[in-house]
Image 1 (cartoon, rainbow, N blue to C red):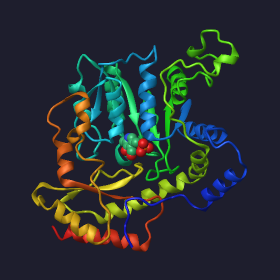
Image 2 (image 1 turned 180 degrees about the vertical axis):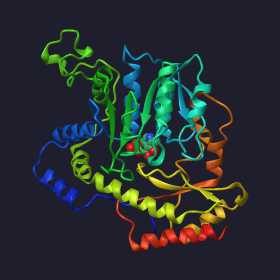
Image 3 (image 1 turned 135 degrees about the vertical axis):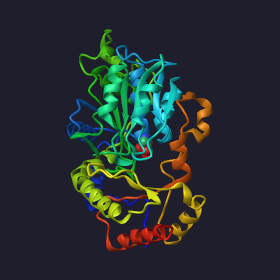
Length: 392
Ligand SMILES: Cc1ncc(COP(=O)(O)O)c(C=O)c1O
């Protein structure tokens, strides 16, 4: 048996629902199930609007492009956005593509989230927004970050693709940004094979997003949308493009799976939290640190960072772990500043990003799952613990 990074959560109920969907020969491109899922996701997050797209990456792209084309949201090419030194490539890609400047701020080793104590010092005259990323099931320190954003007149965007259901001081993630993104890629908390969601309470951003998701057309605009100001006859209206859009649409197939997964999400989160207790009880070793434990996190996976003195043993340790059939990977993708995609970016780095570098050099992660760890999986984690303890 292998302890995998990811376990598939699509089960019998999802398969039954899919069979029914296909046999009814209904429309499979986005339709009523997408709408239903959007409404449910908006409700869970107590947000006015949710737009489903085909991935979390698309949700970030949709959020940024919709903000750029909003008149009332003042963010434009060459403005600066504060970003953490640890995240997935597609947190940054839309900023680069829209000519925004990245202003990197290092992460904290304890939380792996952006170091809130550095943000204010990193702000320049050009800074317009902070793009927070909730890493691996843990919310950023929004208490402080919201105050910093208000004090400095900055927008707050939230990438919540890794942290569905995590809670910061009684407030669920996905509710902190002017827009917030979610992902339901198959390794995430809910699995629709591929899928993403843009959440916002801002009407203008919502109208833009509806248009940009679908080629830039105005077909789906609500009555009082700013995009419907000019008079167009109904014949041509279906085929007018007001914004330079994409096709980021999901399918009914993903939404059908998503509706079942949402019925199971409370159980998934409970199981992830149960597994986390098991993991954190097992891993008490002064030579290793994990992301700080908080019972309200949604525990995407478990990180292990080796303290300095054991280096250069990282690869040796990983080899031993993999030999025991336990899959490992770097923490997200390590130090984002090491990635060649940045040659296409305008960016600056506030201070030495030594923590991102540290986790790249000394860190790795293993998976969590949405089911309770079974006996074999627990044994695997104990084997992992034994390996780590052998370095004490
Ligand atoms: C922080 C973060 N943002 C965005 C994404 C992109 O999500 P997707 O894989 O659904 O495109 C990921 C992917 O895992 C992620 O970790």
